[in-house]
Length: 289
Picture 1: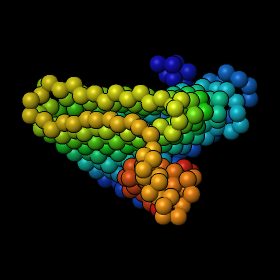
Picture 2: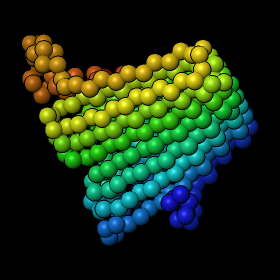
Picture 3: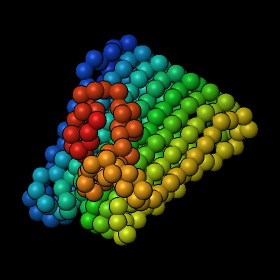
Picture 4: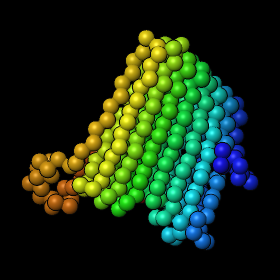
């Protein structure tokens, strides 16, 4: 509502019926607060007609150390048999607050996949709502968040299985150190008529210091009786026995620690299908093969 009240301009991404966009489309948003307490409100609308496909990279970068609020809204509609691959990279300035609302509606046999990377900002929150509105729709929400010092990272999702024969997958991982904190609140709603639903969600957090806090709440609310649904979460520190084993093979403590963190994140990053975007993200977060 705040974004709508203050909107002046926006970005429309429109892919006509049957058009396959071969190369990723990159929307880059760069923020630089001239003074403290600046409000920025980008708006993006993505429309894919029936049978269209697109890979969308959305990035947010903060210049300098200004204190500002970036209040973003992205709405997307995928027509029948359309495919939208959506990657978001958030690397705001250190004093910034980043808040984004993502709302997606999927038609019959469409596919929506999202990969969310949260790196910057003092406070960063992404709220994703996906409505599986017609049979055969499939959505996949994945991501990672890295937080240090006193950063706070928040991922809130709602997947609404409104009709039968739809599939959803959700997999998020976080790495927290110093006095950083995170929230993962994943909510899957299976309505009474949504028989033959297949849904799974998982959240894992790696805590690298005693002061780091990970709050996780995977939720299933099921009103249908013929479904296949699962959810789970796990949070913990590095395994010291694993570190000792790696050091016994000739690596020092720092190298062993980095290798384990690398392995923790690599499997979810590998889910990105576009190799150029995948390599970009690996470089940004220091992942190695």
